[in-house]
Image (cartoon, rainbow over all chains, first blue to last red; front, side, top):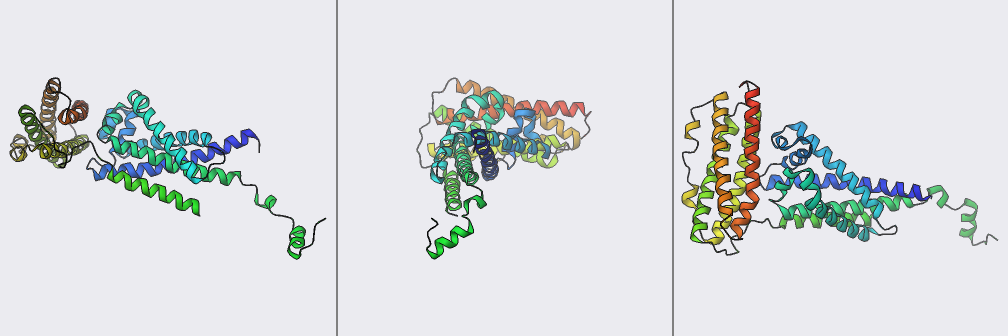
Length: 180
Length: 181
C-alpha cells in the first residue's frame, strides 16, 4: 500500500472514530447537564455561542442543531489528528491509551487556548463543572482511539480473495501432498 | 469481538467514573471555616439566589415573549445550581441559612402584571438585581482571602455577567419588536 493511501485510510479511520466519540460525548454532556439541573441542551447552546455569541444561550432548536453540528465537526477534525498519530501496530489497549493521552492534550489546549479565544461563553460555563469537562475529554479520547484503532486494523487487512490460497493448494495440503 | 468488548468496557468504566467525579462544591463531610463576615455574606447570597429562583420560575410561566421565557429558564437553573452549592458550603461551615431560604416578597410587584407589561417589569427587576449582585460580589471578592467562598464567587460572577448581558439583549429585542410578543 502506498504511503499516501495508508495515511488517507488512517485519517478516515480517525475521522470515523472522532464522529463516534463526538456523538458519545454529546450524549454524555447533555445527560450530565440535565442531571445537574442545568438543562439538557445548555452544552449544545454553549458550543453554538462560538458562532452566535451569548444570545445562543436563549436560542431555540436551530441553535441546538448548530451547536451539535459544530461539536461533531470539531470531533471529526480531532479524530483525524488522532488517527494520523496512532502507532501503526497498536492493539485495542494501546489505541485506547493513545486516545486518553490525546483527550488530555485536547483538554489542555481547549482550556488554555481555544476556548478563551473562540468560545468564552462555553469556558465560563465549564468552569462550573471542571472535572466533568476533563472526564468528557478522556471519554472522547478513549472512544475515538479504540474506534480508530479498530477501523485502522480493518483497513490494513488484505482483500479477502488475495488472502485465500488457491483451491488446488488447499486440496494438496488437506491430503498431505507436497506442492513441489 | 474481543475488541468490541474492550471498547465497551472502557466506555462503561469512564461513564461510571464521570458520574462520581466531584464538582467543585464542598460537601457537608468537608468541614470549612468561615469568618463571621463571610458567613453573613453567605446568608445574603443564599437569600438572593433563592429570590432569583422564584423570579425565574414566575417568568417561565408568565412571560409572553419566548426569549423572556428562555432567559427565565436559564436564570432559574443557574441560580438554583448556585444555591445548591452555597447551601452545601453553609452546611460544611455550620452556617444556618433557613431564614435566608424563606420566601420573600421579591416577586410580589410582578404578580398582577401580564403580557408585555410583565416582560418589561421582569426584565427591569432582573437587570436591577443581577447588576446589584455583580457589584456586591466584585466588591466582596477584593476584600476576602482565597477560600471556598471566594472560589464559588469566582465561578458565579461570570455567569451573573452573562445573565446581565442577556437581559439587555432580550430587552433590546422586546423594544425592536415594538412590545409585540
